[in-house]
Amino acid sequence: MSEDETFGRTIQLFLIDGTPTGLMVASIHGWTGSVLVATQATFGRLLARPETDRAGIYILHGPDPDRALGTRAYIGEADSVRERIVQSGKQRTFWESAIVVTTSDDALNKGHVRYLEARLIELARASGRATLENGNDPLSDRRRLSEADRANMEAFLANMKVVLPVVGVDLLKPPVGMVRAEAGSSLPPQFEMRHKSGVKALAAEQEGEFVVLAGSEALKDTGYVGTSYRELKNELVSAGVLVPEDDPLRFARPYAFRSPSAAAAVVLDRSSNGRLEWKVVGSSANYDEWQQQKARADVATP
Image (cartoon, helix red, strand yellow):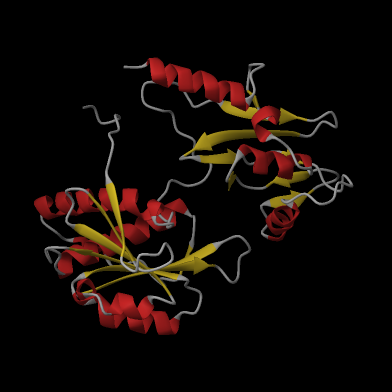
């Protein structure tokens, strides 16, 4: 298998309380790592778990009180996570979820978790998807491991990159707007929208998100009311993602929407079917037709 090829993974989600909002343990089949996820309501039950009395990494994650639409996080490590995460949680009020990463066989030591902490902070800062409360990056000497241990920790980190987004933590996903080519293909298709007013926008799919790229424009004050995305658009303006110019609004930076329709509604300032409104650049095909063509090609590929 080449470096660019991907393969399937089996992620196991165990709902300890039997409810989707309760304490959760996530792992990958064949991986000794365990990712425990708790809310503030289930934090006490998290601390009672034996896994938290082991060396590991923890993440406190929640909305950023100082940045509209933003998230904030704190990343830490400890020989015994239980005591340290309690202290960190008391010092920070923003968090809504607490994530503890340990191993089922207690295989992590102090050097391992310091290395993982440093790498997680490095990747989270590069991603830019959350504001980190960590004051300084860990010192470089925390990452002094043998070549074999570094390789093992990078493999451990690769599994964390798979599991964390599944449990709602996207700290390690690539930065929004860094659109990359799929293996064996040219750059992924880009989509455009052109309005009769002259307003135009450009977008691309990235990591399962529909990203409207920086420099795109959006209509404002069209007189349409009642769109379900009105509040989102106002938040984008407050956050500085959309900035006013002489007439249209402009995307000052890329923004990842949950769907093409959400992106279309913000750009056109009205409820819109984005699957029809967005067109493939250089083609008459819309997003829906492109997706159907892609699905047929995937089925035909052995």
